[in-house]
Length: 371
Image 1 (cartoon, rainbow, N blue to C red):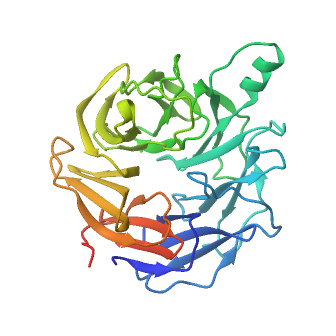
Image 2 (image 1 turned 180 degrees about the horizontal axis):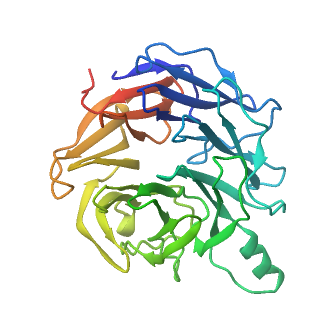
């Protein structure tokens, strides 16, 4: 099927450099390994180990290592190290400033050292080269419980580095009452901003989403509800959203809901505090784990589609800024298990999907159809 297979499991993330080089980080046997490719994954470099000391790394669901590139060619890796208690962890970070030849000793990005949930890390580099790492954090839940109080879900915390990853400042709470099992979506935004979009736990176990904007380590647009699907679920959806903010400031988003037992991937343009604009259904039964990318008026949505023929990687595109999308089409297929697809844009704004399966990692061009 479409794309080029590369050795990996389902705990892989990828990023394009400004020169078109593809960087791929994977978790293998307690280590993180980095490889690069100059030919869209047809061949890969020898692996470079990121963390010298092996440690248990979260590779389940949407909790997998992340990679981002700095404005000066730095390579940034973040991940969650598993602790002995179930679902507990620490978020770690390492960087390379010599083109991936060597990596710094991993550092914990948060000061809090309690054996609690610090998980589902997300990372974004802003236009100035500063790094934001956000994660799901359980400290406020634990504090409330110790006082005999109720606390919905968990919280989102973040830490900021203004020195290209040499150090991170103290963590700050972004918001209370987030869902505790869904990934956080981050996107670079105009005017040196970083936009954040995550599933919240609203009263009555309504699992809609919240949006916020940060700049320079500070919250610029306070968290505000941004989806109104009204999905009530007293369980872990394990379905985080996707976000891509255009150069024009339009907030393109995708998210999952199963209200009324109707599993649906939705698309909309976020207007925090009110329902999204151009709200539309992208895919339904069997669809999951969507991601989104934007370049000018072009918008791409990719997702996994489970069916009798195995797992399909699906794509829909818009050429009018998300007002209309073409019909869904299959661009790859696997009989193996597959992780969440990751939409990537290269320096030419060509779209690709990084798709990690137990049968191998694939880089699938958005323009390619399954064969």
